[in-house]
Image 1 (tube, rainbow over the protein chains, first blue to last red):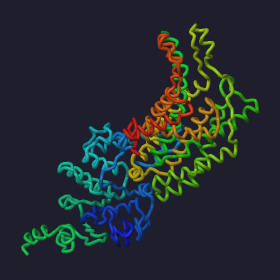
Image 2 (cartoon, chains in turn red, orange; image 1 turned 60 degrees about the horizontal axis):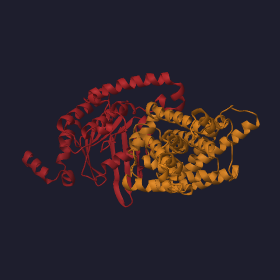
Image 3 (cartoon, rainbow over the protein chains, first blue to last red; image 1 turned 60 degrees about the vertical axis):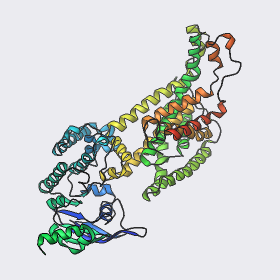
Image 4 (cartoon, chains in turn green, purple; image 1 turned 120 degrees about the vertical axis):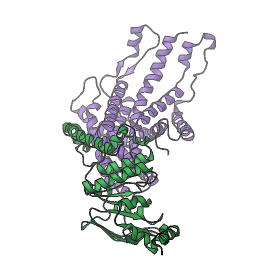
Length: 262
Length: 336
């Protein structure tokens, strides 16, 4: 689905992403783990068109999508969420969701004046869809609340809801579970699984919660210092010496050793 | 004590001019605030954009007048206004294409765009003077007054007269219509919402599939309309002189900042705050006080806090006070 070849992103002398290559297969939920500053979010930013890569290419189904602007990628079905939840704070939760599908007929000045019937019909459909999404995410009681007033966890749900408003092909979730309580985290995990199964979304998930990763992700890719360190199932990753060294820490190493009796 | 005459004097010299001037400033400040909110820079060329819009309108007005087209009691300029807006829209879109787009693609810092807009300001300034000349131009026609001072005196039997000029009436009416349209557009239409979304959170707007170039184009179109309407109304009410419009930049920016940059409601409120401060501080209150105070306390001086020559000092003063004590403005705008 997505092939990344030798991606570099340098900020001056700092190499945030330093020659990362990976393949993300269609229909998978890929976990992306690694220590802070490993270049995970920068990688997302480069793929999503927010940053231009210093070198390297990104392909989607064989098509070169390197450096396309975010709104073009959106129309190709590439969506992402942010590590720190973003929202249109002055709009209601429902309006936030209704903003998502681009190229609505109401977006041209002409239709604003002369295509009112079509816009009304389109908006009615969007409204229905938005309400379904909110119900699915169990935040339908907040639909008229200003998005800026939501709690951190609710904003995360809204982020996820945004990806459900259109038929996405691949969704990049940046720490969707950070700062979210267990129950809400389960809701989010359920939603991701359902979207993956029912609507065939491919996911790439950055996450630090190993239980969450374990429940959802196969394969798991571990990054460190801008490079891909290892790839495999979570168990393989957990047993990988390099990963333990760079990320999981020796505490876990000891635990793994105890468990395996080595 | 003569309260009635005092009130009429206040209405005549403070209230009515203040409302008219406030509406003009509000329209100007709306343009500045939209550019700040959506394109993210302070557009120093706004005063000269207003001058350009007014100039195109004036040229069309003269042409209509020469062909004998009139609007009866209304100024012919109203008929020429759409052409002025179209001309200004072309100018702004052209400027964006040639100048601003280059910096947008480079994701230039707002400070750079401010300096760029100063360059644009000088060019527009020169362009206007080159085409219409630096002198004062008159283009108002039709009826001069809605109510004349003498008619008012005859009607009410009061000693003080109340005059409402046509230009003042038109200013307020047009401002109300334009503002209502703008707010309907921003709050109710999908295009307006995508503009608000882009202003609120650019990254998210882009990742929601909103086309930034389209938002930018529509912003310039709306700004062209606002600037031209503001410029023409000011010109009808006072007179048209390119340098005056350049000077208007200060009260307009003061209005936008006082109200809270990036906040359209604030721009309107700010416009009236600045206008009334300017008018009340530079008005000679002797006349009103003579009516209100007993003879023994009658003021000998003019009771004018500042001469009208210093009216721009009022904007400066307000600007500094607001920036010191409430940098986000009356309505919560973006902090500078």
